[in-house]
Amino acid sequence: MKPHPLFRMKTGLRWIAALTLGLLPLHVRGATDAPDLDGDGVPNIVDPDVDNDGIPNALDDNVDGGIAKSGPYTGQYLGDHVNNDNPAEKDIDSDRQADDSLGETDIDGDQMSDTDPLELDTDGDRRVDNSGSELDIDGDGRLDDDSAEDDIDGDSLDDDDLVELDIDGDNSMDSSDSDIDGDSKSNSAIDEDDTDGDGKLNGDADEDDADGDGMRNREDGDDDNDGLDDEEDDDHHDEEDEAEVRVDLTPTSAALNHSEARVSLQRMATGTIKLKIDAGDFNPGSYNIVIGGVARGTLVLTGSSGKASGERQFKSTSTTTNGEYLPLNFEVINQPISIELGGVAHYSGTIPTPPDPLPPGGPVEPPVTTVLTQSLTASSGTPSQAEAKVVVDIGLVGVIEVEIEAEDLPAGVYSISIGGTERGSLVMAQEEDGIKGYRHFEIIPDEPDELLLDFLAAGQPIVISQNGTTYFSGFVPGGE
Image 1 (tube, rainbow, N blue to C red):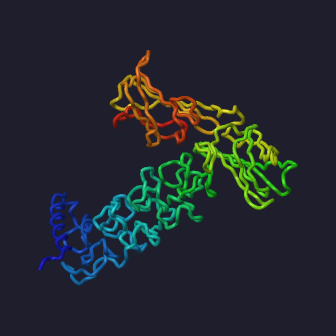
Image 2 (spheres, one colour):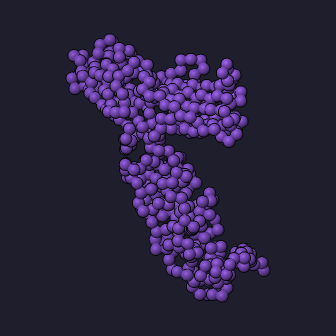
Image 3 (tube, rainbow, N blue to C red):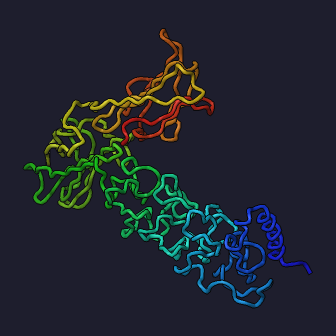
C-alpha cells in the first residue's frame, strides 16, 4: 500500500526541517523557538498538518486543534478548541507569531504566503476573502471595518501605506475594486464612510486618500472609487481648495409665473471647472444660453406646458460638443448670462465669483494667472551637460498649457510620458546655440505643432525616455 500523499509530504518536510534545524544555532533549535504541536519533528511553521489530525491546514477549521491520527500522540486531542474564525484565536497556526504581527506571512499555515494571488482564504476559516460573509479577512480578531484594524489582509502593509494597492487582499487592485476594504459594503453604499478601511472617515480633515489608491484626493477625480466623478457625487467631501457657488437667475417679463432658473459654478481640486445652468416650470423648447453676449449652447427643456425642465452643463476638461458636457473654454466669471427663446430673454443674471482660489474676471481667452517651472532630474546615463524642464501655465480653468523643454540631449526622437501614459514625442534637433527640443500641450491648440491638453497633468509623474531608457524624470508642477 502506498503511503498517503500527506504522509509523504510530511516525511519530506521532516527531513527538510531536520536538516534546516541542524544548521541553526542551538538557541534557535530549542523547543521554545520552534513550536511542534504534534511532536512529529516538523515545526508548526512548516508543518502542513499542525495538529496531525489528518486534515491539511488549508482545509482545517481549527488548524491547531484536533485528534492526532498518527505519531506519538495518536488518538489524543492536541492544541486548543478555538476555531480559526473565532475572534479569540490570535495565532491560527500556533507558530508563536501573532496573526497580526509583521513577521506572520502565512496566517493559516497552509504553506501559501498571504500575499500569494492564489491565497483566497487568508485566515483559513473556509470563507474566501472576498465573500460577503467574510468580515475579518486576516482572522486577527478585529473586524475589517474596525477603526483599529490597520492591516485588513494581514500582509504586513499598513492599509494607509502608499505601496498597499490591494487593501483587502482579494487580488483586485484598489483602483478598480468595488469594495476596497473588504467589509462587504460597496464603495458606493450610503453607510460606507471609510472606503479604504484605514480608520479615517472619508470626510476627516487628515484623510487625503479616501480610497487608498495612492492618489491624493485633490488629484483624484473619484475620491471614494464609487464610479462617480467627484463633481457628480452627492456624498463627495470637498477638498480645501475646491469651491462652488450657486445663484438664482432673475425672471424677465417673458418668464412664466412660478418658473425658476439658476446657475452654478464648481471648481474641483483636480483643476476641473464645471458650469451648470438648470431651469424648471418653463414651456418646452430649445432655449439659447447666452454668456457674455455670445450664444454658447442650447438648454433643451422637456415636459408639458408650464412644467418643462432641463439642464445644460459645461466642463473645462470636455473636448466634444455633442456629449453630456460642452467644452468650457471661455471666460465665465462675472459674465452676464441669459436664457433666451426667439431672441427674447426669459431669465438673466451674472455668473458669480466662487470663493478663492478662483480669480475674478479676465479676458475672453482663458487667462494665465500663474506660471510654474520645474526642472527634471537627469538619470545616470544622461549627458552631464543636458537639461530639461516643465513649464506650466495655470488659468481660470486650471492648467491650460504645459511645455517640455530640453537641451543638449543627443539628436533624435524621445517619448514623453505623463501620468504613466505616453502623451507625445520630443524631437531633439540642432539649432544655432545647441541641440534643443520642445513639446507644447494646450487646452485650445492654435498652432500646428501644439498637442491637445485633455488629460490631468498637474502633480503627475513625467518621464522623457528613448527606446526604454529614461533620461529625465520628475513631476509636472501645479499639484500640492
